[in-house]
Amino acid sequence: MASDPEQHTLSSIGKSSGEIGNENEPLLSRVQHSDNYSVTAAILPFLFPALGGLLYGYDIGATSCATISIQSATSSGVSWYNLSSVDVGLITSGSLYGALLGSLLAFNVADFLGRRKELFLSALVYLIGAIITAVSPNLPIMVVGRIIFGIGIGLAMHAAPMYIAETAPCQIRGQLISLKEFFIVLGMVAGYGIGSLLVDVFSGWRYIYSASIPLAIVMGIGMCWLSESPRWILLRAIQGKGNMQDLKENAILCLRRLRGPVYQDCAPAEVDEMLAELSFVGEEKEGSISELFRGKCLKALIIGTGLVLFQQITGQPSVLYYAASIFQSAGFSAASDATRVSILLGVLKLIMTGLAVLVIDRLGRRPLLLGGVSGIVVSLFLLGSYYLFLDNLWIVAVIALLLYVGSYQVSFGPIGWLMISEVFPLRLRGRGLSIAVLVNFGANALVTFAFSPLKELLGAAILFYVFGVIAVISLGFIFFVVPETKGLTLEEIEATCL
Image (cartoon, rainbow, N blue to C red):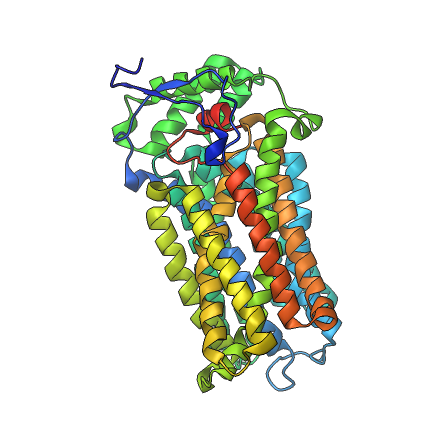
């Protein structure tokens, strides 16, 4: 088999490289179709799902400006502008709690609906939430709108990585899913930019939130036009949820449409390979909830939830809290406006995420994770030292802040979402990913909620040192537990890395 140039042999991966494969696992072989996909055809199956990430990022940036606008006595345009800190907190965090609800909803409906319909549903919920928020006559209605919009976030951030992972050619899968993170950051920058332009306009907060309506409409139309994930169709076929031949022909049609004209002749053979590999790894058995917590599913759950948990508890929501004060201490007067600081950091995020997109399928997931998280460790200990005994050296804080942002965006930022979309077995991918997304948003909410009390109790210096220690632990987790998935099909990842 090794002498046949048309075959690619997957050897098991030893634990010395940080992977957790079984050395006795049978080998898979497949025909490589390295040139048989159209980059142009791959754009739209990525773009419309990625709009869900763009809307998520836009909400983060827009809300920071909208809350300023709505509290203005002269330009809010409402009589209830005098909001308490709790009221502002409800507006700000409403979408986050909605995202938690969306993740719970996805756990029950994702495998039934399929990836495409779930993304269409998220676009519809985005649209309803944005409209309600923009036209809300009082605070309770506005909070309801924020929660509904957040449900759209939970559904989109659950389904988009799955759809992109299952439809993208394996050679560029890492780039496309990482590019979704780029879209999230792009949305944040757009939210800050549009918000800063409209923040002083009369009823500007309504226009800020209304700006997401056209994007939700485009996303919904795009998901109506796109094909369903061929892997999801084949999963239903081998589990007896329809006529095998009809579902197989449907999968071939979808694959041809997703990969473009150059894939017309290869699609039937590729579908046959997918079916054989799905049967080989046992996907014909319908997954149960209990199966998530044993065997290879448990290993996937540990990898996925571990990454998204460390993504949050290494201080990601908290470090940026200090951005404005750090830049003010550096003497940048223009940065005294928190919105401008956010735009500056957003541009850096875009640049570093773009760098990760360019190299992730060449270097692999593990090198970027190990290198990026090492940078996070250094930056957190520098920040702790700055607040403890280097407070007169503002350059240390600025370098540490920029290092943290850059390191995060080449590691946890894009690769966390990439890995959770790759490691779960197909029959439990919907439920497994919903748990990982739930952990992500839950940890985000917990860190955000606990940050102020912990800062008051421990002080900024000790808190950053604590985050630094957690980042060191995350390095060990990555080295010993997280596998390399570069260049492997999703079926090969299941067979050899779990």
